[in-house]
Length: 247
Image (cartoon, rainbow, N blue to C red; front, top):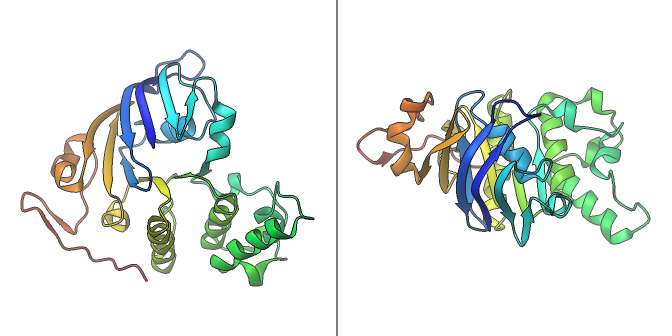
């Protein structure tokens, strides 16, 4: 279970990036986190990943609470940043997926290899990371995080910059994670690829949480906060005719 209670945060004493955010997400659910640039989405993910402590209020991830247990939260949450090049640290695919693991432990390395295989990276094991496509880099980032078996997966704009096949691959990953009961929070500007995958939605505006609920409770009001509703959503009719299919 994830919960935020009256959370505020400011970078170096500047104007608050988050103000009085209260939100709850039950385990195994997928939350779509949306809002225009500068609304606080990435900052919120960073706090949930344990990278920062809230200036005010509390954050609970599982049985860990911040402020005070940020290090423990970092062991529970996996954050995949929008810019894959900032995320990748290893020189090769295999080195990056296995980064931080004890290579002499067979069970651990089997899990790392299985995760690489799941993302189609096993044939690229020895390939230099700079030779990967953008979509392959995104998959590498996901593989490295999921190999650590987090309880909470945080994805910052995972569909950004992907072509159609890449978007379908990312959708399949999110859908499989849902089936396995992994809690996910996904930020997005284009809601179309995520529209049928998120169980709940939260809308940020100028550092505040302004809307939260199911699609039929949120989508008709998105334009009030500078967010375009999915084309597959017919406002006011409560009809969902999703064009995407996970394959």
